[in-house]
Length: 79
Image 1 (cartoon, helix red, strand yellow):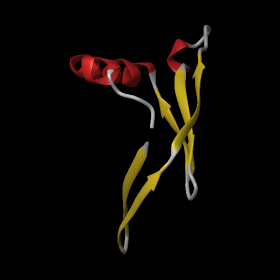
Image 2 (cartoon, helix red, strand yellow):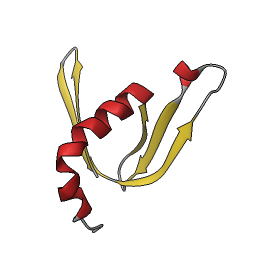
Image 3 (cartoon, rainbow, N blue to C red):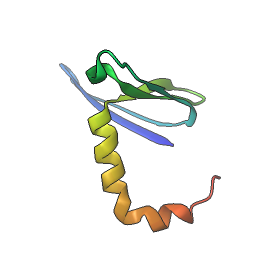
């Protein structure tokens, strides 16, 4: 996966462009407080690592936006 981040600083912009692989995906559910549920995607590469945390609403929006290209994704192979 390729990660691109642009962060605005007081002296200008800082850009990060890194290649990494998904290490693991963790789904945290909270029965008592469902609004605190989230999906965490852990990734690491040679020069970078991090955690991408998505709320249930963000996961729903992501899956809805990928529905039109579902056929393209089925034919994709892991490199």
